[in-house]
Image (cartoon, rainbow, N blue to C red):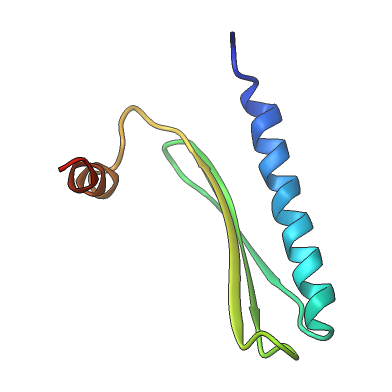
Length: 84
């Protein structure tokens, strides 16, 4: 069974939108800033940050989708620690 990566990415991006919308509604005054970024090796992400809201002093909701030939050293290092 093949995984439709575009559908998975779309689902999680939509989930991020729903979470941000719900948190903004709950906060009642704060709005999230958006920072989108691209990774040269492939992929990118969307980071949303709220600061100085009515309820939230500071918070973030991030989504990233990255591609590459192998995991970065930082991901490999944490994986090996978790396995031991």
